[in-house]
Image 1 (cartoon, rainbow, N blue to C red):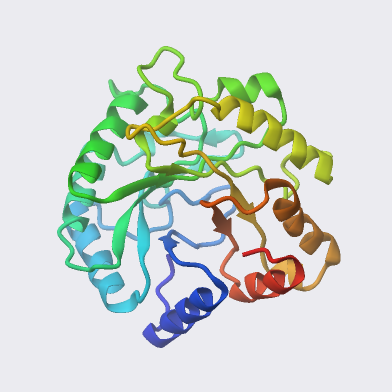
Image 2: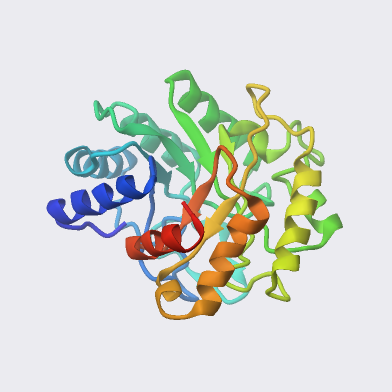
Length: 283
C-alpha cells in the first residue's frame, strides 16, 4: 500500500464507514503494469519477515480506525512478470509467510481482524520446490485460525465456461484433500465483468457467470462447515465520467443482489462508491 498522511487515511475511513463499508483489506496499491502486477511485488520490504511485518503493523496500528485484514505478500519485491506470466521462483515462500504472519499476530491493534491471501489465481500455484499449495495454505490457515483471526481470499474467475469454472481449484479438490476455498473463512470470486474480462460485456454474461459459479460452489463448505463463497463487486473512478461504466457496476447489484457477505473493489476512489450508492444502492 502507499502510505498516506495519517489525517488523510482517517478521513477516507470515515467516508467509507458513512456509506456502509465496515471492513478493509490493506493491499499494495501501486499501479499495475506488465512488470508489476500486485500480489506483494510493490511492497518495499527488506526480506526480513519479522521486521517487515513489524514496521507495517506499527504504521497500521497508528493509522487505522476501522477493522481490517492485511495482505500476506506472495511475491518478493519487484518480482519479474512477463506478459505470459510470473515466475514462482520469486515467491517469498512458506517460511517467510509464516514468520511474517506470526509477527503480525503479536500486534495489540484491536482493528486487526485477519489476513488476506493475495495470490489471486483460482488454480492456486502448482507444486514447486517441494511445496504444494495445499500444504502452504493449510499451515497458514491453521496458525491464523488457532489465534482467532480470519483468513480471506478474492480469486479471479474470468471465464464463463461451465466446465472451466467447475475445474478451478477454488471449487475443485482434484488430487488434493480439499478444494482451495475450504481453508478460508470467506472467499469472494471476482468476475472481472466491470473491466471487460468476460465477454460479451452485457448483463446476460454476468448472469451466466453467476449461474455457473453458484453451481460450482454448491455443497462446498469451509473448515467450519460454512458455505463461504460469495462474490466481489467491482468499480473504479470511471463511473463518475462514463455512464457505460456505472451501468456495468450497477449490473452487479441487479444480478448478484446484495448477499449477506460481499467484497468491493473500488480502486482507491471513495467517491465512486458514494456515487454508486445513490445511483443503484450499490453498497
